[in-house]
Structure formats: structure tokens, C-alpha cells
Image 1 (cartoon, rainbow, N blue to C red):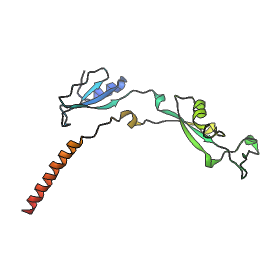
Image 2 (cartoon, rainbow, N blue to C red):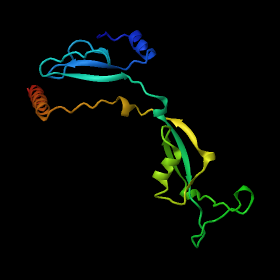
Image 3 (tube, helix red, strand yellow):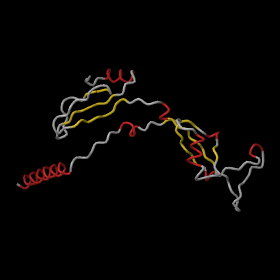
Image 4 (cartoon, rainbow, N blue to C red):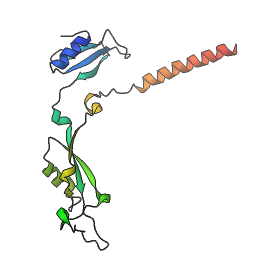
Length: 182
């Protein structure tokens, strides 16, 4: 069912957790035909005219929270003395443990959907076999990459169409310059 775009409709779709997109019918010249329509994944999209196309813009998508979450790990590497030996702590809890080198400290963002140990084994240890995770500095965060989920590629206009427009604009400029010279 195609609906006119109303804020109440969009609000209801969000409340119902229904995916939807805005569809605009474009003619062969890329000009809109009629009003944009809001369709859900169960609706049949309108048919474009001969040579025309549909422009689709997602306005509601549904994702699990975990898809946007990640754990930021602090990856430490040992400090080394001038002979290349690992520097060990001398006092307290750090006694006998390798001391981290702040210049070699790194962070890794591990998706919440992935096992941290498996990620560390696969992505970090092959490049830094002496690395370890500082558990006290791990944080959970969320990021919504809107471009990745809502960007819809629109192919560029054809070279022929651009060339025709340039010829038209150039002719207009020459005509206007001629009027100024009179």
C-alpha cells in the first residue's frame, strides 16, 4: 500500500519497527513524477514510466543493538632495555611482570558480536606475539555509521546528457554576451 508522506505515518513505522523507504518516480530526464511515496518492504513499488527510474531513499531500517557495539581494547607491548631484554616490574603487583611501553600502546575495536580472545589471537598476535590486553582499560561503545546503512548510490549522469547541458549553457552565455555588446 502506497502512502502519502505524513509525520504520523513515519512515527508509526518507527514504533512498529517496520523498515521503510521513500520512493520517488523519475521520468527519463530525471525529473520527479508525482509526489514521493513511503513504502514498506511488503508494499509493491510504483512502476517508473518508459525510460524513467525509481529513486529510493531508506528512512527506517532495523538492526540489533549488537551490530553497532564494539569493545575498545588497549593492547600493550613490553618495554625493552637497551639490550632488547623485556623490562620487568620490581615492586608490588607489577613485580616480575613485563612493563608496558606507552610508545607501543595500541587500541583495537572488536565488534560485540565477536569473541575478544579469538579476535586477539587472529588479528593482533600474528603481528605482535608479545602483546597482551590491559583489561582495566577496555571500554564498550556504540557507533552508527549512517553512510554505510543509509547511503544509496546514484549513478552519475551520462556524458551525452552533460555535454548537451554544457552546449545549452554555453549558447546562453554567448547570447547574453551578445546582448551586452549591443
